[in-house]
Amino acid sequence: MTTRRPMLGSIVPILLGLMLGLAAAGCGSEEVEVDPALESSAETEMAVVDHDGAQWAVGRGVALRMPEGWTDYQAEALSNDGTTYEWAVGLPADTRPLPAGIQFSMGMEGKGAPFDTLPTATRELAELAPGYKLLDEGEVNVPGAEAAAFIRFEKEIDLGDGPVLVEQLQLILDMPSGEVSVLRFVGEAGMWDEQMGNAYDSLMVAETAAT
Image 1: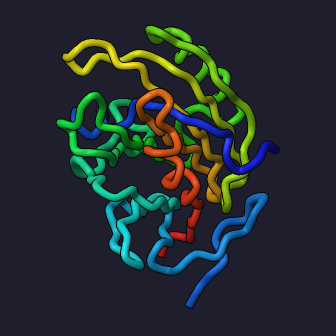
Image 2: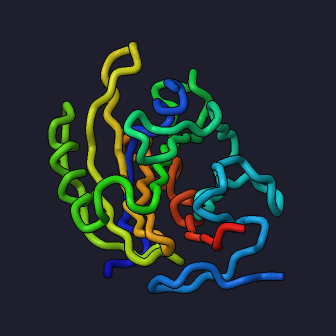
């Protein structure tokens, strides 16, 4: 395992949103104490939750503290192939040069690609992007997850005002109940600490059994 943070990060999430008592949670490599307000089952729809003076993205077994000024874009939706729940949070959509944010592709048990194959498939797809440059990849410790892997790279995107160099950190989570979920942290290249660091560090798998 690498350390909890693989340093730096990246960009591609908000676009999805534009288009379309304490309990121990998880049984992965690191147990984490989670306030019940931040717990959810794999069947719980993603939503913004006000908790302890901050806004959190909560649902489908994960919880993540949103940076100040972030918002969601639309209600969670089913992916075109019916294998994931899609949702996104980030800066307002009209933010330029980039509405930095996070896209959630939350898996369903028994559907989609298995965890072991996704890191390689993710890298091969990323390599097709304009301006692609690999920055880092490997395993990482996410509290509450059974296992986690990441790939961090640069790429170019165009929101209509010309190309923007972004950093994207794609995090693949093997969830306790058997789902495989992917979170895409997307921000301006070189701006990881300012735009993504605290959100990434707050991420935890807080999955409970469905009620």
